[in-house]
Length: 450
Image 1 (cartoon, helix red, strand yellow):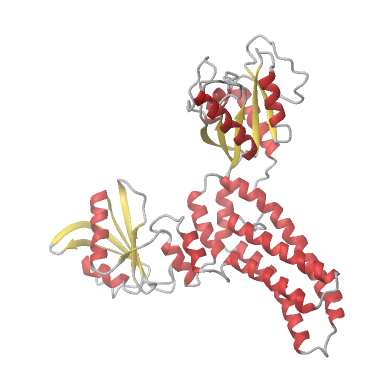
Image 2 (tube, helix red, strand yellow):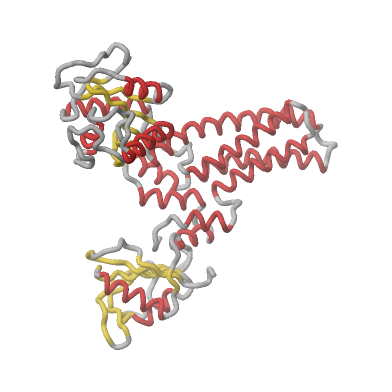
């Protein structure tokens, strides 16, 4: 399969100034040479740009420049050719059709990057970072992607694997040559401190990684309150757009409304929910039940109360539902006459959703409550994907098991089983140990042509 030459349109769909049709594989240069009128591409130097025209038999399709990159110094470590044509949808599709008719195969999503991994140019963390770079929405997520792309995460994981491998080799040597060191000596002088230090260091990375993944994926933030307190107005104010319908009629919002904002380099996945109250309206009741479920899944809750309305049993229910959650209490409609009893609410923000200054204060409070520091490290000391985080925790758990075995004075060959499991789990992070199913699933999330 990987001997085939693949092709795809690497630029975004739609009409633009330029489109790029990309090929990778042993026959990439020859395939393009069949439809290109200009220099003989088989004779040009690598990493050159060549002017000419694309022909469909005797009919000229487009004036183009063709970039030629010869293996192994390419993205995939295979020959790569990029046809830079005009950005019309028809002409781009026609050129793609021509390269397929002349022997190329349409690439699967992410197949160019998959080949880069399979050919040893990058590891799995770098492959994930390629997609993170494309998807980056903030300065922080861009910085994290670049850390991963340059190999910082790979180096970090490789360091742990070498340390664990030293333990495994020490055990194997003792099993084969017991006359050199006793089990007790290996356990007390080498295994015990090494395993302990690795667990401590991995726990630090897991803690940092949880923050980095939140920064990358965004924090699910639910705006909760009874009907007509101004939840939708606050959502619109934070988003700086009129996304939610705002009226004086209670129960206007009957389903969840979502949006994203960048607050201090952190993405908030905002959810405006239906007002929580007892209702006989079937549609509104479904929305209320959804709101209650979102409270359980959200990482941050913004509870909205009305300055001009007394608290009632619905407000008390909301306070009870969110009492153990990370929450910000907002008193909206500060420009209206006061009727609310503020004494039972504890810490709160008094504001108006229509005041830019007040919304800025709310954003500062969000930054304070989320307590996510910017990624300012000069090198990555964390992982940035849920996949890698899962494997990192699995490695930590295996090391914990090994430590228990050491403390219980178990035979060192038993300890070796957990050490090998930890070593394998870390290997799966960087792709040293992987399965075809894992690769197919991961690269399927990439865009075509990458």
